[in-house]
Length: 89
Image 1 (cartoon, rainbow, N blue to C red):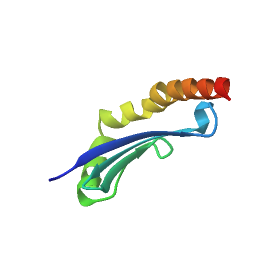
Image 2: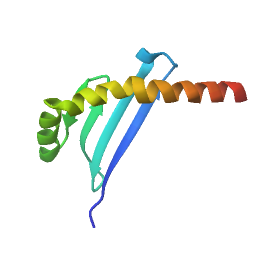
Image 3: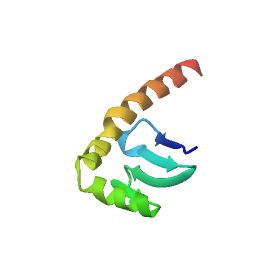
Image 4: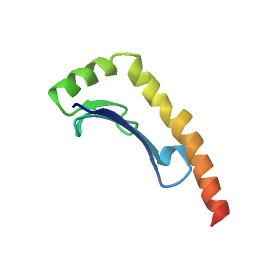
């Protein structure tokens, strides 16, 4: 069979927004085909298929919505995580 999956990640050193990186990686059969990184600000393709998708998504609404995820998804959840971790330590 074939397997397609997406990994979404928020990497951070502090709860400050500029210290957070949002990434979204798309895989097909364990091979990364395309990735969005808030540090780069766009999609980057790693295979022929991924490069074509990255070009299309970087010229469409997909890239705009992913850029907003750093603040709406990561910043919110990092705040919850750090508050929870600090109160338990």
